[in-house]
Amino acid sequence: MPATAPNTARGWRSPAGHPIIGVFLRVGRMEDYKKLILQRPCQSIFLIALALFMALQYKPAVLNYTTRFVDFADYMLQHGMTLFPIADDLQPYPDYTIANTVLVYLASLPFGQLSVLSMGLPFCIAASLMLVFIYKLGALHERKWGLCGVLFALFTWAFVDSVNSLALDIYPALITAGCFYLAYSADLKQQRGRLALVFLGLILGFALRGPIGMIGPALVVGSYYLLSRQWRTLVGFSLVSGLLFAAGVALLAWAAHVQGGDAFMQQVLEMQGLGRIASDHSPRYYFYFSAGLITYSFTAFYALCVMARSGRQWLGAPSLSAPRLLLHLGAWFVVLIVFFTIPNSKKARYVLSITPAISLLAAYIFIDPNGLFSATRRRLLRLCLNLPAIGAFLALLVLGYNSFAARPLQPDFAGVFSSFALLSGVRYWIGRQYTGHRHYEVIVLAFGVAAFLLLDGFFFNAITYHLELAKEPTPKFLPYWFW
Image 1 (cartoon, rainbow, N blue to C red):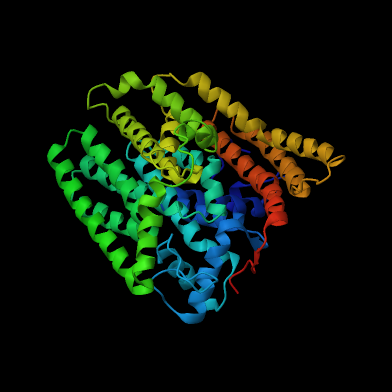
Image 2: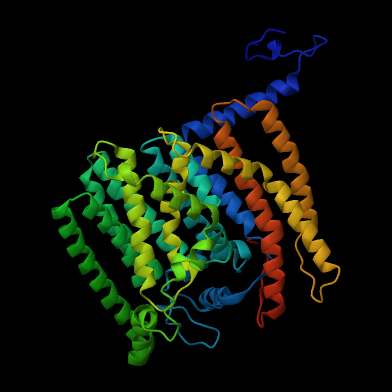
């Protein structure tokens, strides 16, 4: 058989000389899929991520603080629109705006019932769109940078867990990524009209998450203009953002007054404003510099490595566009960490908006032209290849622990070991087919992300779900499918 057979059924033959029609058809379809993904990367990333996040939503019941979201949406399904979410005690809830409840309501309305998928759909869409903006931002310089940034975001436990647990902080993360992309690409492509879309994004952030949904993105965009020394744009942006913020607070107060009177208006302003700063929680100013950052796992670690070792490049000439983007990403990370350190109330998910920045910072180790991160990259790829074995080892440890534990842990052992077997075969195939391939590093990183997601779904999520179910007083059991 010739070394380069033509792409026709006649060219594919077995050692005996018989045409291999089935192989040809399969390869043809794979080539079509590959071509489609390369031609439309943003649509492909969105659809693949959406399917992935929807699959990870699978669970029999909604637990913890997200049970209130079920109450909010159920009330709206039965009684129609309100200005604020209505809790199970029939009282308006002051801590959230109505936007997310409306989105869940719209996702559930065609089917006449709430489900796990209709509850999770708005969060999955927001998370998938955030990945698209990560790709587009990195691809402004190099496609590989954008793709690796997406993979690092999926490698971030805090991000994946926030999607699974229906954390509203997904929305500010999306808005921050979108606003920064619009501001940065407007300068890069000389399209100043995109600045109007930044203000639209800030309005959307306020609608989805209240004041905190606007402040974070505005600070990130403002830091970009500050470091770019665009003083006139910075002043104009700050003034317009301030006016939009004041208008948003006034509208929020008006809606609260209409919904529940003066007392409820005071509650809303307290819960969504000053109450976050002057709460009765311990300040813990070190939180986001220690335990709060650990949940961002490998991504935060490699991002910090890039920030530490690329300091000299950040101070280079403005023509070095990639290092200058690193500077802005580092500022994005630092500004949000410092800002969220001020309020007393702190949780790791509150700084979820750092995910796009640290993902692209970490991804830089795969496109660095100077070889600064060669050893770091090799160690990461080795870890990716060994993740399935690590998962199987953890499952064996739990099996041993369960033999004498009073309350056994409940991972999905069948899922862990079957995924280990599958991934072991895939690893062997990658070693045979792609060693030396120009995209070998991206393929191995994607393999590591797949292993991480399977380990998270079958092992960590399964264990935490059963532990939380055992102590949850009011679990909300819902059908998984929309219907």
